[in-house]
Image: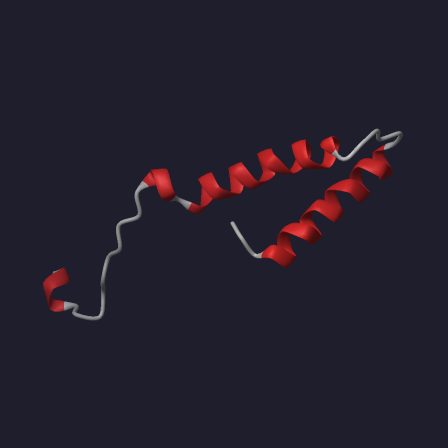
Length: 63
């Protein structure tokens, strides 16, 4: 049946290189970098530190 459908192609993505692993690594690294920046006195300080880390990460563009 698939032989008759030439416009269908399958791409194999190994689970070890999936986008979910990259996302998990990013969100695992984010709190460590934000908390490493210094003492945080409130939840708002933590949110600001995380947003700053995301901005720096987005500027570099390196996964």
